[in-house]
Image 1: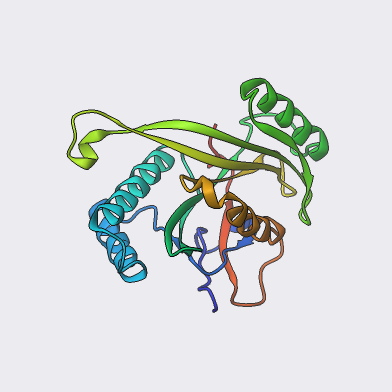
Image 2: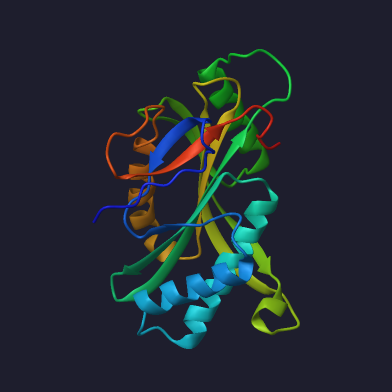
Length: 233
């Protein structure tokens, strides 16, 4: 299966990096009307998981849109959703988002190993129960953090008065950029903790595909833009 090539950059802009999305991932248009996006997501879920209950489909669509809206307010550059049928015919969904974080002032180059190391130290202090370390990707060194977090999804989205609790597992990679100061933050999250190992395999493929080289084939499915001042805090 061949994925469609898409990009988040405007004509004339140069991406900081490219990465590949495997089959099963659906990239979102961050500027799309939310109502249109929800309807499109519902159609995709209905087509892929025709045997799932209406409640399962509704919960997946609502949870995905809530997470997406939260990430858009944080200034993400890329958001995609993964819809998979796991062993045992189980409905499964995860979300990937990518942000570019840049300092507003300072030198125009960086010690990438030192930057990743400092991030790992900060994450250990912030999340003492998380798995934190450094990994070497083909693109270069990255800080890595895996942790569980408890979310409260507004109950009004489900027609309820009280918030709906949800346990989410996420992995995040902080990848210092080659193109200048700053880093790319890749975060993947899912409520399907039972199949976490399968998702790690998918994420491993995505992170190994990160490159500064413009792709020559049709499998590269995302680009993150180099644009001074666009990064988020």
